Image (cartoon, rainbow, N blue to C red; front, side, top):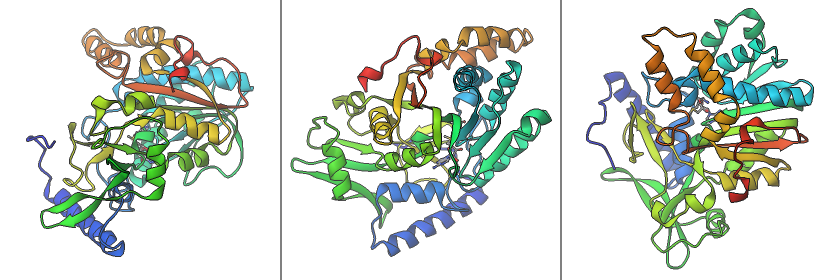
Length: 389
Ligand SMILES: C[S@@+](CC[C@H](N)C(=O)[O-])C[C@H]1O[C@@H](n2cnc3c(N)ncnc32)[C@H](O)[C@@H]1O
């Protein structure tokens, strides 16, 4: 559904949209007039110099399109730092690799928290595909003291050599392109993208063999007409980013559910959504290249993919449980003590959004995937829902 109150584009943005639309037309022409939905997402989110994440859109924060947990409150990063410190201590040291570091807020706050508890990683590497976000991260992290800024390195690709430590990825899985499908009485059709007289539209085709098999393998009975999405790239992507982790834990936090809830009867239509200037809607064909496109994460798929690449599930729980298990109340108390009386109530309310059920507390989940690490994981000590995956 398109909200009536979408923020109009500036002249520069409108000109940029024209260029992205032209690129989609060119891709459609090259592909015979139809693109899978994942191919469309790939283009409008990641095409160099054009896509939402690859060009200049502001994206995160108050002046952008959405707010993530590290932007909401540094208490989030302090809790993650507690989890990192525990794993690094269990390994006898190591490094941190953050994937998709956004504005750099998480990296900056994790490093400062780890410095405060004398638990710094040997280095903090960032794998970031977006050139303009990388520049924002560099500017933000350059303001850290030398002993911290000097530990940060950027990577263009997954590290080629093995390392021990922690992988962090907050709200990255939801940014991976998904395929959209509709279940038929017999078989499955794929909802891809084509150009029509009225602009780009979802156009159905018989599903690819891979998508048909993936829907069959969900193991969930879906009624005819049911529409949803599946992230078929997740397995290959997870394998590539975790391959160099020789020992340690990979921590993914995102909005999502276990499969049974993801493909529940009342979730017909799926979870796909678009964000522009903090307004949520479901039309991927407006603001082309200038809005975020995202889908919730099927954490059962994450677990299956992890097992397939030789990782174990260290824990799966809600963000609220994860943060409470890693000292949320203590970290919030310490943070509040540094604030003046005027800002304290607002800042505390923002931090509480991280754990409250109507905020991020229940919708967001944390999963730890471990390799050759059987030490404790504080984030999963309160409640571990791995059995529901
Ligand atoms: C929704 S933002 C989240 C940013 C940040 N982690 C946060 O929580 O504020 C998604 C991030 O993932 C990055 N990203 C998307 N796909 C990626 C990929 N395949 N590899 C690495 N980073 C990716 C984006 O450029 C962006 O930094």
